[in-house]
Length: 402
Image (cartoon, rainbow, N blue to C red; front, side, top):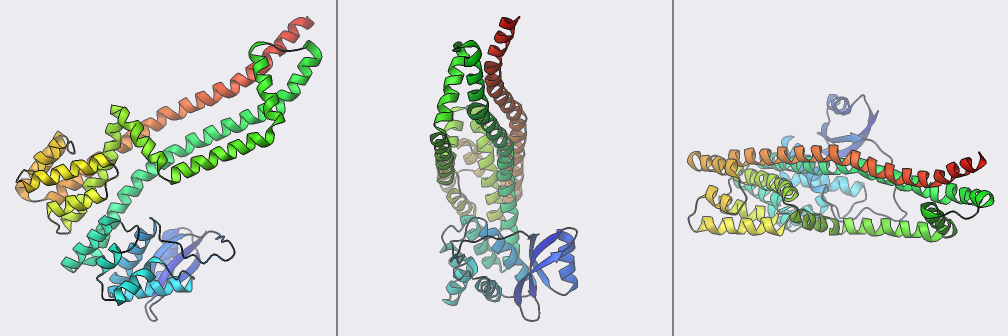
């Protein structure tokens, strides 16, 4: 297999991208390490397509920050200073024609004398948890460990998101296949069948007549039919990209108590993991709660964190404040109460985060096992209904022949 590996030349301190033939990713990394290169990242090679005139200067996306952190951590571990590492990554971006990439933007701010955390905070879309982690690394002079903490946090978030996405792929394929088969029957099969039936038996009646009429309309207006389907797909894509689908899902989940409880598990898993990261980095509980509130998914969680923060500032216990705001169940409350005695808040927060993450993963797996057969049943009933409506007159004609 062919892999694309980004690596640093220790002598020239130049970052280059190599295409390596190897059995797996570990083999590709090992091959370049044997040549003396410092491997930054490795992935399966793929074809890259670009529109003419495209320069790749788009604003950094959500996935750009974790990739940048991984490469920055590797360069720092190789002995570079922060400025040297960012300058090296910026040079690589310029070689690729991305003159306004993430590293290039940071390099300009660092040259103005800004700290890395301040420079990162000024970038559009920078995760507040990442900025806080870098700031904690600057406080303790251990930026590499702070980047490691953020990457562990990002891994948890991506795993939970991947669970949701992977569980939605199969139902989407089933629904698409069902719609495609139904359209084929309506556009190709039923019009020919209706003409044959009219020649033999005259006009159909009942459900068969309605199905034939629908088939005739779809066949006569194929352009409109495909245009409507294309428009529906485009609107659905825009709705999902603009965040409307997420807001609708949140509103729907809020109306179903057991579904809302699982959605809260997803949010609380990320919130407690962010708290664990920040508390481990030396933040006070009030500062950690403030940053976690900036990263909250829903307004309810943000409001709950604000109540917890106010209660703590008035002298209340952390465990009690979280429990009263509905952000900790009895197990979570007792874990945080134990942390109040031993001071290991980051350990307790990490345990609570893992507990909520496991609950959410179990929920997604169970829902997948239930939804998949239900969707198969719906598609089978839809397609089977069309086939049955088409074959009922055939049985009628066979009876008439006898």
